[in-house]
Length: 527
Image (cartoon, rainbow, N blue to C red; front, side):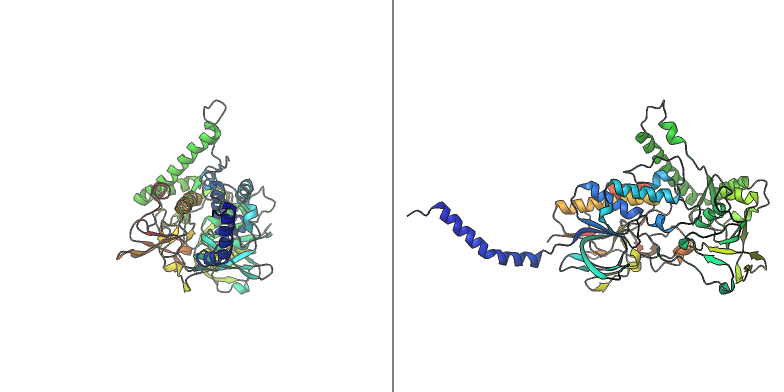
């Protein structure tokens, strides 16, 4: 007797329904879904850039940005001191996918923050950001194949946990809460105000004698801004007190090349002109850096000759701008239209080189015996470095010492699964490298998705071959004090490619954008 087809179908359906609870339990046991595919720590220039690349990729990744502060912008939300600006040209500081057509060479801090905010709005990133959310711990579970991320709501104090398949650290490399400030002898006796630029919020300085301690980019930005006669506030006099000199290069405040190449009679579009000028700036940055590293004596003479011209007619000694180290051992300070030297020539500002003996009630006494009167002291003494915003990292219960870990392609951490850390250039525009690193991470995630991989780990040892740890950090090309103080905090380089940091845009471009994703050092696994 033939069984009707409908009856057979009903029996098969019933058997499948009876087995569904078992199949469901097996599925949960072997495949645990994370809350997010990608979790980004930080909503600054790097974090927003990474989010935009994910949004534009159509990979349909669920992602979130966890930001400790109450607004996006990172560095450009933190620093609000007078005159704050970029020290890289804006065409290479802006994202390659969203050109910033601006005549200014060095952009103002508030304009950079607005650019980041506008970019986030254009790519609908705002809805993915969780503000006031501090990441305290990152714990990888090999059993569940995901990250368990412990966070704290800074307004309510509530501690909670989210999970993610992949983590991208976009926190930069310094402590956003505290800058580096030495303990000066007698500082408690000073009757005026002591301010660190990282803590600057609506400080009144009009008509005051101000001493700015430091000789880096922050100090050289502050000094002319504090005595700007066209500003709402203007200090009576500002003294830049430096322990040792720094190289300074005056550049044009505005670059008319973009307008020239895309003008009325030019065959080039604005976009084409932008690409040409941007490449010109890239070649200039890389060329100057290579020139300085191969012919430091000649570059030093050129820089000092230009400073002499900028100080011509004043009684300011060139020794205040003649460092003992070679150019680019520390980052060059760029000043637009020689504004620092103009302030020195007017007599509104002065520069003093010497060591501090102690603070007094009305100023600073130097070891030379010279006393600098002050109503306010600004300690532009540098940054305090910190990785991943201070979050602790664990892999299967074992804490990872990031400072003793190796970096793979300066993006991933050796033997740590599914994690990337965004680190920009120190010898060129920060965003030049961030753009490429984001594209590399996107290539990696695409590769994994197409081949159904869920875990990727850069292995420092394979088949008996081991990468050797070198003493150089990822910022070894810069000898600034804040870098030297943080040797234990920064990840290290290896003794071979791709574990070395090369600080070369052209080499990195090939590594990030052209080299095959899979190599012998990367280990992939599926569910």
